[in-house]
Structure formats: structure tokens, C-alpha cells
Amino acid sequence: MHAFSGPPLDHLNRMTDSTGLIQHAIFNVPRRESGYTTDDNARALRLCVRLCGEHSDEQMLERVACYLSFLENARCPGGVFHNFMSYQREWLDTAGTGDCQGQAVLALAEVLASNLPRGFRDLARELIDGALPALAKLRSVRSQAYVIQAGALLWRADVADIGPLEELARLAADRLVDSYHRSQHPEWPWFESQMTYANAVLPHALFDAAERWPDEEFLAIAETSFGFLDLATTADGVFWPVGNLDWYIHGEEKSPYDQQPVEASTMAAAALAAFKLRDDHHYLAAFQKAHGWFLGQNSQKIPVADIESGGCFDGLESTGLNRNQGAESTLAYLWTAMLALDVERPVISTTIVAAEDVSQPQKLHQ
Image 1: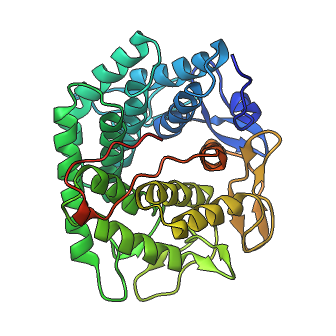
Image 2: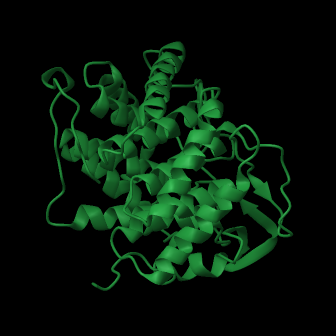
Image 3: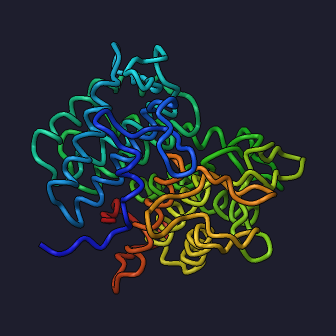
């Protein structure tokens, strides 16, 4: 068995207990009173499943089992998932938001598309099947994006019997297109009247949809919206994401701070998906710019990630770093660092052709 060459997981391990991944930290120490979220545990599950494909050992499987068990415990009647759990293991909501549902199903799709032990995959399928009625009712644009990405993982891996989820993914792609047409203006080719958080998941999902259904307008909208986002989040030659202080409302100035790691991570993932699909080095440059944000290539010229522990600070503010290293931030860095290893390999699978030249869906493997 080859040695693990992925990003360091020391801080992720520190933030994880027998229940799951703790939500927040004080500096680099877990803040127990913050409890847990399904969002974070789903992201951690995705990461560790993907890393298992590179290096599967008992510790990695234990991480996967912990986060998967959290999601199983999070399901509610009707197939939806709770999101917020106290440190005392009490659920604090009746059901999570649509984004939480989408994140959970995306992580479960990662499990189902993997080579993990049969029981892990069987549980993932059971949870996905149970969530289908709830997924059909989701309306937020990001939840639609996560459903599309989940479908993409499964059809790339040739997972059998995914027709119901694939139908929902196609419906979600059509809804994203509708959102785009309702909100776009000549100077604002976007899906909403403002840019908020995890913006790049929207064009990313349509790149995935274009791979599966190349004869639609998914690719054109993905490229246009990604280009607009890239332009809006580039300044002084570096990635400068929309800050979550006041977001970026159409017709107003972009909020420059507080910059969040999830923006760099989702931008990097979308850029790499586009590069694999289009083989256009403009997208590879966008990936490298977003990845560089973690390493100090940002508006403050400060490293946001701790490359020794795998932790990541919670944001970049006008005064410097938010020095807490919470779960979402840490996972944003770890996911991007993992993608960077993929980029650094000698060969990247790049299949691409323009949508009008494709007659059959392409199979790509990340």
C-alpha cells in the first residue's frame, strides 16, 4: 500500500470526536459549545471518501464511518435531514435548509459512487432513495446545484438504477437555467440579483449538466456565468471573492471583506470541472488563482491555510485574518489542496468538445 500523499488531516482529526465534526473552533481548538452540523459532516464525508480512493486504511475508513453515521442519524421522517446538533447530541431544528439537503445527498452520492465496503454504499443508497421526495421539493438555486453534482458523480461512475435521481438532476438543471434567465441583464449574467456565498457551485453544476446533456444551453450559460464570476472576483491579479459582510448586489459595489474560504474552494472546484470539460487553460489559470488565495496570493498577502496541520483560518478581513479555524474553512482548504494534487499529476483526463459537436454524453472520471 502506497503512503498517503494527500493534505495533512491533523486539524480535521482534532475537530472530530466520536459524534462527528465539531462546527467551530477557538483559534485551533474545537469549540464544543458550537455543536455539529450536517453541512460540515457531509463535506467531511465527501473529502474522506475521495481520499479513500487514493489511500484506504483503517483510520480513513473510520473517518468515513463517523461522518456517514452522522448523516444517518440526521435523517428525519420524510427523508429530509436535520442540520444543527448540540454538543449534547440533541437536534436543534426540525429540518435543515434546502442547501443542507443538497450537501447531504452530494456526500452520499460520493459514497455510492466509490469502492467503499458494500455496507457503506448500501446505506448511502438507502438514504438517497429516502430523500428523493424531499429533493423534488427543493427550490433554492444552490440546492439545485448540489443535486446536479450528485447526479454527475453517479453517472460518471456508471452506478446502476439512478433514474429517479437523474430525473431530479435534469429538472434541477432546467430550474437553474430558468433562474438565470429571470435574473440576467446584459451587465449581470447571473442566477440571482446578488452574489452571496458559494457562488461558483452554480456554474459548476451547469458544467456538469452540459457534460450529461450536451445539446442543451447548459454549457453556454455555464461559460458565461463563470466568466462573469471570474471577472467579478479578480482584482490586482489575485482572487478577491465576494465578502460576506454585504455581499454583491446588482447595481452596487462588491463587499470586499469578509472573504470566506468556501468561496475560493468552490471557485477552484468549478474551474477544474470546466478545465476537464473544455481543455481551456483559462480555466486552469482560474483554478490556480483560487488555490493561491489560501497560500497568500490574496488582497492581504497573508496565507489563510496552515499547510502543516491542514487547518484553515475562518476568513480574510480588512484588518487581517479571522484566526479561528472552523470546520467549513478547514474543509474548504483540504478539498482545494486535494484538487491541486489532481492538477499536479502528469496526466489530467481532458475530454472535450463543443456542445454542438457532441452526440453522446461523455464519461469523465475525476
